[in-house]
Image 1 (cartoon, rainbow, N blue to C red):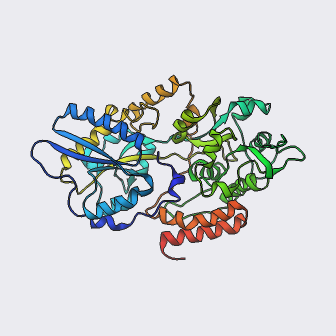
Image 2 (cartoon, helix red, strand yellow; image 1 turned 90 degrees about the vertical axis):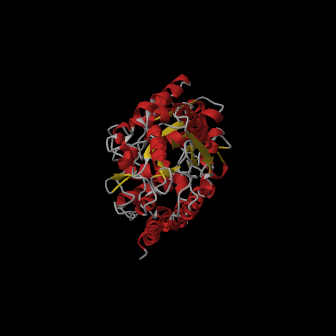
Image 3 (cartoon, rainbow, N blue to C red; image 1 turned 180 degrees about the horizontal axis):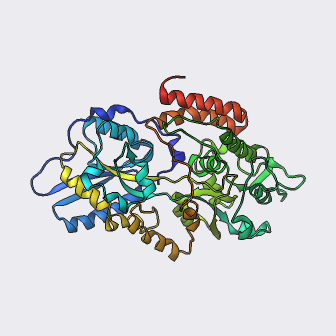
Length: 444
């Protein structure tokens, strides 16, 4: 799944898409073969099944699936579009489509399928792929919201119950209502068996952490910013790290790591986005805050009993981010009629349902989502915390702007120092904001 934290290390999409050349698939009479690109191997398997069903429906149309790894996906896409060899259809995330849309590289979905088609799709994903009133992608997956996976055995060993962790709250001043900190301290343990709330606890010999605080955009710091009433960006894409409430949220996270020692060192997590996931799977983190994109990873790899509870609530409540992926059509394909047919198919219940049947991805076509819920219900997993946090609730917007990847590359070194505790939160966020906005605007 597309994860926002992965975008922090992704290279920028350039405006070279405007130099698009000719179409992708060779023209033919009668039967037509289109190509489709994704970065997700699990999704590719589902799409092959979906396109096989489409081929039965229309024997003259074949769609071949190509997988390009995430690390190379956007670099290769940019090159292929500029050279006229890109696929007829391809996966796109909300952070990177706008420049392609601006340069005429993408099919206008409203024109191709009609403006009423979007009523069948997850509205938050539709909103993410709408620019200047035009929809540029057919929603395929929705991440839901952020919740907390927990190790039932570690919770019980600490003398806690699910009720003790189900509705955690946090406070910037670590006051009496900061139940997240108190619980995390009870769940953090050193090699001598001392917990972080006991005298003699040795943080240098920690063998078990209570919580997964880290420099994780989607799972951690965006929800903390939102839950404190802070902001991450303005609507024009410029960054607002110096918002006082945003600064408070970062300070709280840094304190969890460096003052209270209830989360792993940033020396481990800054450069390894999967460190906390791996530690949770190994039984070394009790509370792991993440999204649906890690549900299959947890279900397939943990050997202990686990469950899911709600996102901790801050002064502004429990405020999550949500994200999605769409399929876009190549505006330079020589088979626009067939591209529109595939977009319509993938925007239908039957066409989109395949991606949810294995439980790997939540379909973004609303009528196709039940197969996903049925899969996890059969597996005995309650996924409701991922949706309760966003159903008719305020959310913090996902990152926006054609230059987000440039900006994230610019601000990350400063956030690294903040999370390591080597730069004060105030100074580090000022530096991060200046660098990020310079990348966006080209100025100071």
